[in-house]
Image (cartoon, rainbow, N blue to C red; front, side, top):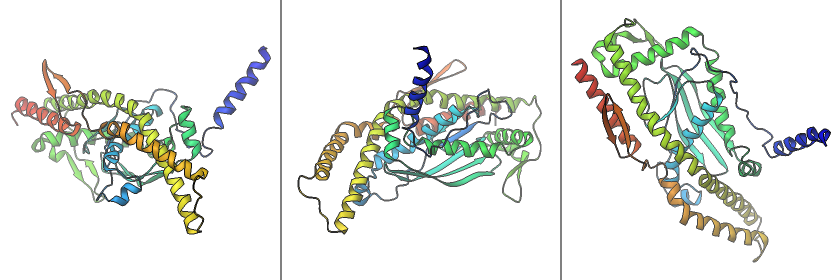
Length: 359
């Protein structure tokens, strides 16, 4: 019996691999711990949903404003999980607004998302203003992709997230230690300028390429810089606190979201085939398999709309528990949308800084 175990394991692995897409993009993972020099922090901004004007044609194509708005937050969290899993970076956070002082900032827009295809226009730049990439990432889901997801082997659009992570890593690996250190220093100085522009505005300058360069650095024991670093950590404390709530919400939404995308794909595939038959004047007979399948799919889709759409649409509408943050013994309770809470927390921190420094 013992000699059969390796054979059985081989068969099991082969059966699992056969369910994965043949052209899978594998995530480049750091097996050790990222060094301090390499562990840049990444800020992922909630995506532009890419909806200018909602029309009945949009709905026919599976574009629902509520769903798109949910995806605009959901997809960055999916990318965040992938970046964390790669183990190549420092803190990876999802922000409601672009942060000018981020070490690495990723912004973007949803171009297409219908269950068959996801296309995102993404831009990554570092604190200096240097663009790492500015391009479209696109992936088409197959039957195999959803089968693998149902078996919990691979997320339907995981290849796209892997490609984004690998692209970021590829650019970082081209930078010298000195450049990585400069990115961190410029990020700190740009944050300092937002709080005390009169004191720090002349520490940075823009070169001919429109990138920030350091003119001079504050002293290591600069008391104002120490206060700024403390305020910055408190701002990140808010993001990390809300992130725990949204990570749980992401997990709860994933099965519903995957189901919606799978049903959308089935509808699109059937509609495409149906239109092709009409073009050839080959109308399906009443009671045919395809006709019955369409009726059944419509029923499932209608049921999903009634029972689950509200959860999906409101899931990332930021209606989670109020955020409580403690600063030097004082408890601040923040409520409202994530964007509202983030802005309110920034306002409170700036007031604290102003009172401490008299600026």
